[in-house]
Amino acid sequence: MKIGILSSGGDAPGINATIRGVGKTAINNYGMQVIGIQNGFSGLLYKDIVELTDASLSGILNLGGTILGTAREKVFRKMITSPDEKDREQIKAAYQELGLDCLVCIGGNGTQRTTYMLSQLGLNVIGVPKTIDNDVYGTDVTFGFDTAVNIATDAIDRLHSTASSHRRVMVIELMGHHAGWITLYAGMAGGADIILLPELGYNMKVIIDKINKRMELGKAYSIVAVAEGVELPTKERPATYFAREIEEQTGYETRETVLGYIQRGGSPSPSDKILGTLLGGHAADLIHEGKFGRMVAKLGNKISDVPLSEVEGKLRLITPDTDLVVQGKKMGISFGVW
Image (cartoon, rainbow, N blue to C red; front, top):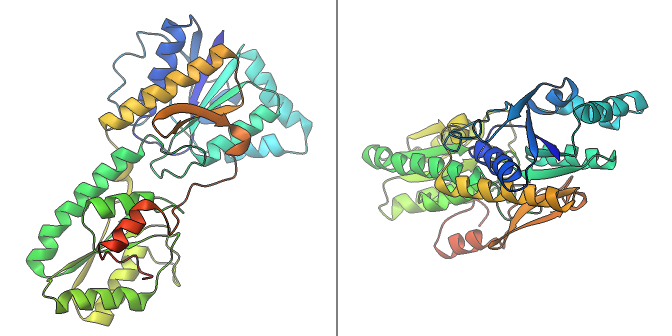
């Protein structure tokens, strides 16, 4: 069999571990031929490929980013849904001209949706969930998330000493798009006093009351962790908005920090290397078994898979009864609404 592997969407720590997991399993265990498709789905159209061998897949486990490059797939997705049959035929022709028996697509929500659309065109595909945001539906966790949480937690840990020394309120903004998983986990692990999530919203009075109460109790500083996707009445960054509002309404010196793309960079954590390796290996197993149109997943303590039809168009989001939210409330941490 001949299989192709591509990565699409934003980069995340662990993509190379996953490419390695798919490729080495396919080559060494199943005797498959493996090609890498460069720069996302556009590389499929332009047949921008590189042969992947056991040797070329060695030494990439620790690397951040992706050896295949990545790109957003909006134009490609429009071609799939185009009323012009020629667009869809162009995609199928590219797949067939490469002689592929299956295409492995590594990416987040948008990628999994596109992968499902390819399966609807009759192509053999397998999806592998990837995002630091941890918001892909159908899996308990995505690789990249653990690394991002480690980096974000370290940043919050470091803010404690500055906040304490200067008796300040520190507001740190973390990534996640519409999901607050990084902010929730890093906020709890880093000892944030207030954690603001897109899924839960916020009440400014609750936030101000929490900070004032801490000061009244002799706690000289507060740490506010806010997710980038929190909806605001202005077009400012959340860190900027909350830092200004807090300082104006409390009189306490407040500073903002936006961690940004640092959360997506660098080598993956051991946990993400292992998860990417296991998910990649299972993708190769599914190909060998002829089980296409599925996304590999971690469910509980097992590596498994789910139909792409159950995944596309959905997000995995935090709810008020998420375990870590419930535990945080019990400990007196404010989520801005209680």
